[in-house]
Length: 303
Image 1 (cartoon, rainbow, N blue to C red):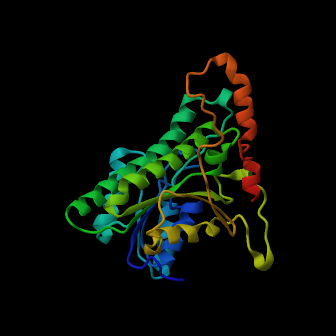
Image 2: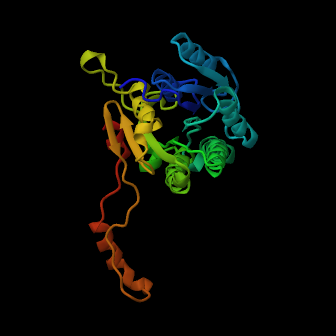
Image 3: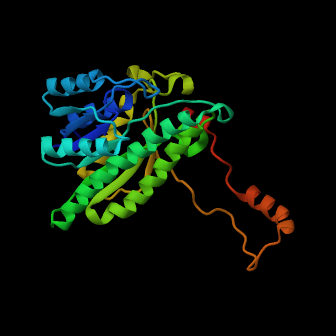
């Protein structure tokens, strides 16, 4: 199933390392022209280097693909606009936006500083919103001009956001917000020929560190936690084949893919009148007992 993205133009934020690097290489292998956006910063967001993005671009070009480096900060309003413009000006348009860039500053809630909170929220949440906002304006303008779009937004959530990760109140909150943002974007952009989906990946990268279990190398040397295992799903979601899929979040790790089923109404009771607080104890205890228990993130990471 090669070349399912032939002729399509993609942006991958945070494309210089880890999952982003794997996504950029797979999209190029599937025929896409790729803008590899990366600040080349350290794990905590400090520092700048063009080296990682440049290496990915050189690898793509050496394989006969087309790619270009972009070093703008996607959490900066104007910088995010320049990333989108790089795709349009270099390759003549934009079909795919993969919002992948992120940092971590893990800390228990009672020790977390406001700077550690703000930095992570800015990169993940604002760094997802701002490029999507500029891309959405481009696609909406095209639609108003009578041009058709077959465009894709692919966001990056995480198990810590969907199921809760200790020591990650900043990162997990941002990743949960990205899942919600994806559902809203899917509804708002559908009329313009744009789908929006998210992935919640399980892979061993510098961002996960010791947070995931050791990789299980199976038959044939298959590395269960390799970042490259996640990217075929991203490439398929980026292709024209995925036009009927939107507003979904996918857990993906190793050879496993499942559709995450998020908040939905569970057991209920309706008195038909205002409750008195004193009578709620037994009612809520019974409701909670009937409800599905929260998912343990350890079970998700072990898949």
